[in-house]
Image 1 (cartoon, rainbow, N blue to C red):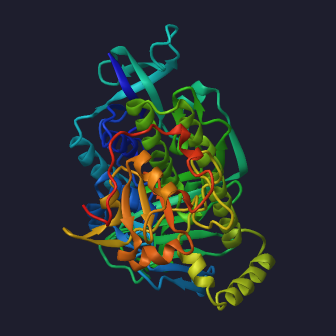
Image 2: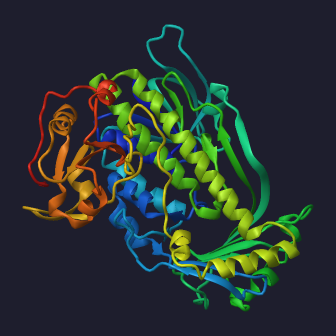
Length: 507
């Protein structure tokens, strides 16, 4: 049997990609070697932009109910004395959700699996080990996978028109493509500790960064009774060399706890040198690995899924130009590389150098924390602009194109709705006043949902001097108006016959 899209790996990235494709009528087969969600905690953090992607996947409300919003970042020295504190002065960010959220990855995966079960377009098979891939000689499909059932040992072949490799850091898909990983910085060995403690520890509702050159670390309360520590291991030191009770004493003060995980991880900063061959793509950890210092590892993978899903749907379902798929790596690779470099820089600033350098850094951080606006830049998430591509067309003086649009609440005849709930999986055109001819042409060509910013002060302020902005299905601004030759950027997209242009925002 031939499948439309084959997804290898049922982690958050693979499941989210499958859901986003299913919402646009694309069928997927998801293969996972485990029968259920991997039970141990891994990623914890999502920012408001990532929760917005979960909103698109249909689980944001439940995710918010189960997650814990973090209040900010506290830098402490080796004795846990506060060096600087950066508090969030607002709970909800521009994307319409809390700016920092903590939840165990297994819990997130369970929510995503529940959502998957509601989409008949998705088939999820657990206990399936992918052994190898090949490009079929007849060229009728993009890829063939040899799969073995982990229980019976029975082998089978699966053909698909598209392969999404969401199979993690040791990606078989990456090996199949012949892609290598480029180091942006040497890896660092860290000890990750997760515990359950029934006694409420006397800790701040935020993230602690331990700026100690002798033992750098990170601490956060991840749930009602769940706590996470990450400590840098010294050269030649193993996890067994660390006295756990002594290491955690400053927080637990001897309170009993249940150890969930104690494991060594190598925090890597790497980007694959190629993300695609034909209709085979790398997503998530298969394409990039980032240190955890800004909490963007899993989030970067979800951005991959959001960027690629709508483009694939247009190619598979509407016959869009195949070159549309070239924009995936072109847009995501520079973006995630910049995010990784940011994480490396933050990690060095908080944990690097000698004791003398740490003292200088402490004085610099203390002084900087008193500067107007510095605290806001530290704690408020801000994703880099997507660089120029055929689907990101900037004009002189245009500060919006390539950025994410905000997500305010919009008044409609049916009541208040979030912007993305109005847009659904469609393009959007946000405008002030009457649409000019070029913007109206784009709206008709894209079958876009049109939102009048005069009904929403936040959108009106966001538009600035622009008369209109085209919002892609991944909520990136494709272009703004007025502009010359404004229709040229539409050449890769299919021309829709249906017209859906509303005078005002409506459901």
